[in-house]
Amino acid sequence: MVDKYSVFSVMREALRGHTGWRPAWRDASPVGVYDVIIVGGGGHGLATAYYLAKNHQRMRIAVLEKGWLGNGSIGRNTTIIRSNYLLPGNAPFYEFSMKLWEGLEQDINYNAMVSQRGVLNIIHSDAQRDAYARRGNSMRLNGIDAELLDLAALRAKVPYLDYENARFPIQGALLQRRGGTVRHDAVAWGYARAADHLGVDIIQNCEVTGIKTENGKAVGVETTRGYIAGKKIGLACAGNSSRVAAMAGIRLPIESHALQAFVSESIKPLIDNVITFGAGHFYISQSDKGGLVFGGDIDGYNSYASRGNLPTIEDVCEGGMALMPMLGRARLVRHWGGIMDMTMDGSPIIDKSPVENLYLNAGWCYGGFKATPASGWCFAHLIARDEPHEVASAYRLDRFAKGYVIDEKGVGATPNLH
Ligand SMILES: Cc1cc2nc3c(=O)[nH]c(=O)nc-3n(C[C@H](O)[C@H](O)[C@H](O)COP(=O)(O)OP(=O)(O)OC[C@H]3O[C@@H](n4cnc5c(N)ncnc54)[C@H](O)[C@@H]3O)c2cc1C
Image (cartoon, rainbow, N blue to C red):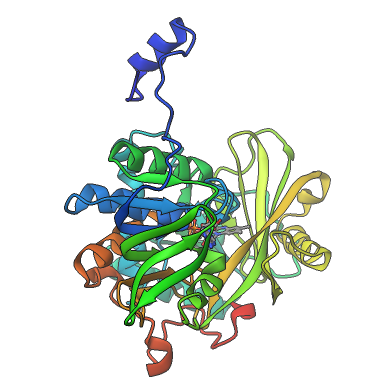
């Protein structure tokens, strides 16, 4: 059976009808007691399992996924990665993630189509220019690449925006060249395959329905495939975080909201970077198949349904038309929703829970895809060593009670405004 993907193995398998590939991961069933159980087979859960197996001492690890790998937000997001953060708690973490993205495909031997095509944040007012200049300066002080483009430079780069008659006149942009896109479901499959090769049991169709505690310690989980004992249990359930944490009696400062994504019919190559509108919530890129991939705001009401409502579609399309009127000529062919675990400050939680041996990875809002490698790395570090990784040390659960929020957007405790 062939294990490693390479030019030679692809050529050899092409000649023998692709009969020699080993399955990307085993269809494991739960067995015995695990050293670590990760609940949630999304990007963060799978990355955590991989880095636990790779970076830490030998242990038995299981990932429990209620559906199939990639059914959650890891396979539903708009694939943008960037590290253009301002605040001290965030900047080092997201830059660490960017560096991991840059070496990920070699590390896990999987083509995740990491494409550093650049992320442009469009500027529409003097005040916004000041804010983006400040952000860019802060990024550069943190060793992160950032460039402030004036109108002429932006126009030369993306000539097709509405520069003449715009409702919100364009003045320039903040550019992070190392930002870009990554094929989202390939990230789940790549981490799953790499973790499986290191002996992790990936158990699909296994929903956790209860968390068993004894004397204040988590000792195992009830699942639709029976009871599974674990010495340590990590929750990485993204949009379902509050529901699963509630099984251990924990009330998280998280609300779940729907967020939609949209894809147009395929058109010739047009947009060769990621563009975000600065006067509303709209962002767009083009997939390698030619579809324009775009999104905007969360739906603004609490929901666990993976679909959104029509007024939000109208709002997103209005944002797109205000920036790029030619979008009105493209036909929308697909849209879908995912569930966002919105915290009260828009930043995540990677921390121990109040229940011993139970660890939390949650609150990724609509920005958790870009965080996947760093989140997995840091959550694995926390679980293995019982202390936070230095770049994730600000993501404490108690910051909401103590007032040390990391409010990157500055909108306060209002998840629907993040
Ligand atoms: C439309 C959309 C666009 C987005 N765009 C971007 C973007 O461009 N850039 C970016 O950085 N982020 C983006 N995000 C956010 C990002 O996708 C998420 O923050 C991130 O994927 C969440 O982490 P995850 O991959 O682990 O989540 P998920 O893939 O949702 O994984 C959680 C898993 O837990 C499982 N689970 C839940 N409950 C249980 C249970 N009881 N038992 C067992 N398993 C359980 C779920 O089935 C799921 O598979 C977007 C999200 C959406 C929906």
